[in-house]
Length: 127
Image (tube, rainbow, N blue to C red):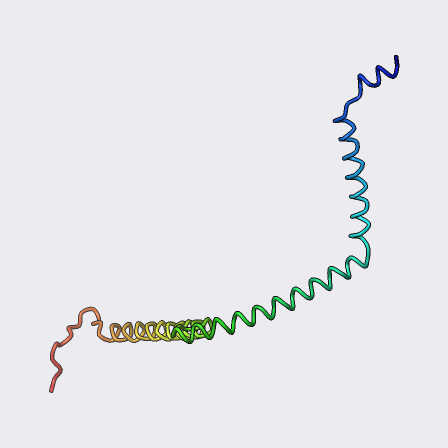
């Protein structure tokens, strides 16, 4: 009767879950051991270095192509736009300085033209 009870209580899904859990644990241990090894770290570092070098070459090549394209289309490059922005900033600062000096000069002129109390300012200078 025990064999029949075992057959009646047999759950194939539970067996699959146990099998899956055991496999997952085995793969996790294997991957942890692999990733923790020095050889894996060296291999990843070499691959990353190769990728970075390739990306640097690609970036340089794309930049050269973009500069050629912009020149052919008579458009400014990034560096030219930055240079123009710097020049405009300096020009704006100079205009602000000139505006401040002009305000100071106008204030001085107004102070000289302001009549003192009780004195009348002649509209026409004496000849």
